[in-house]
Amino acid sequence: MAKLILGSASPRRRELLAQLGLAPDDVRAPDIDETPAKGESPRAYVARMAREKAFAVPLAEDEVILSADTTVAVGRRILGKPADAGEAAEFLMALSGRRHHVLTAVAVRRGERLWERLVDTEVKVKALSNAEVNAYLASGEWHGKAGGYAIQGRFGAMIPWLKGSFTGVVGLPVAETAHLLVAAGIDLHGAWGQA
Image (tube, rainbow, N blue to C red; front, side):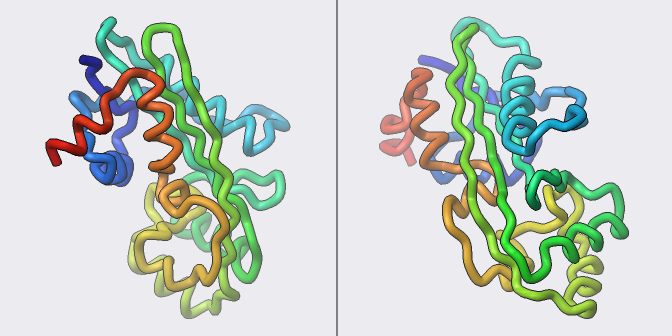
């Protein structure tokens, strides 16, 4: 039976795995350089990050690693995790009143074999007032979040519409992840019977 390693320290990814009835056997967060390459498109960047994370962690023969990366894209601009409240405010104003894309790439590796998928979700943010932006910044919820927001938290009230995967926006598209894990030999249905 393959052991599942989560290549991410994100508590949200662990919660989303739990929706599939899975708890990782171990968590090994990779330490890689997450700087976008010059001229790199958001799609290419997020796919490269997920792959690099999957290969940065040493595995035993019976282990399968799941890694993922999420980024927010406004056109060709990548909005990663804001460094501070000022950058978070800049990101939120860039998203205000318009649509953007949340890209989550998932990579599953067993040995040298890699299964991967990129999920693109289109998200609309309502026009934000200065008071709404300031209140959201004061909540602290933007810390460590791509694009400076968490759809599963207070910011969900600012999103009237999305097309694609809600769980992909949170950080791990569960339907696509389930498919990749099964392909790599993880027994999902056995996990469901135990839940």
